[in-house]
Length: 294
Image 1 (cartoon, helix red, strand yellow):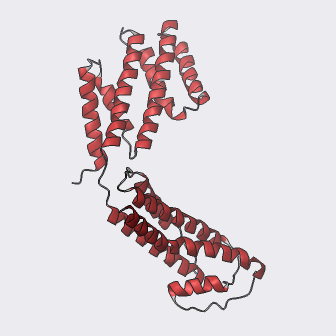
Image 2 (cartoon, one colour):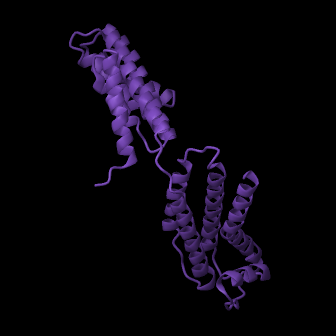
């Protein structure tokens, strides 16, 4: 059974969170562990975003909970009004993702303290949450998966081949095309590239990867536009010769409908061809830059 990198990082974050909580004599280390588990996401940015939402919710829920506890902790009406205030304030501040945890913390203070001091409990929950979030973000930052650059290169080549096949099916074979699978592939590899920790050794290569992905997204956008265009259009000489260089000669004698829209059609075609064919230009640029730096 394969153990993923995220599993390993989650285990490390939870262990460290519990260890630090015990060292600080925190009442309930499992709150820090929960925060670490929830905050451990695929990327550092996602970890920070989820952790921030949990932190804001914990602080708001604790503050409102303490206030309403001193008003009347046993009042059902006070609990109802308090949870309404929590939800309203989260929406007011734009903390929509914090509503759940803010409500949970508020309800615990109002219903499940068992005689404990509400201020002490609230502060402890804030500290526990802060420990778990901080550890999760730090672990996510410092422990990086090994990046297989050759695999990324292979995936980009496959995507390029798929784009060429879609272009051939649409323009030369006159078939309907479905862009969903290739858009999903591009999004997947783009997420992997964006998750690479950039340093002086890989900066140029990551830059090239991002440039290629950007062009592939442009190609997909213009392919979708062409696929949505009604009628039959005529390739101009430049686009026709470009496609001949890629696919070999083919019959471009088509019905001459919608000739007034041929310019628009060929504009999008040019964008597609250059975006797909620009892959080679990026390889040449990257190799020349490496030579200069060496």
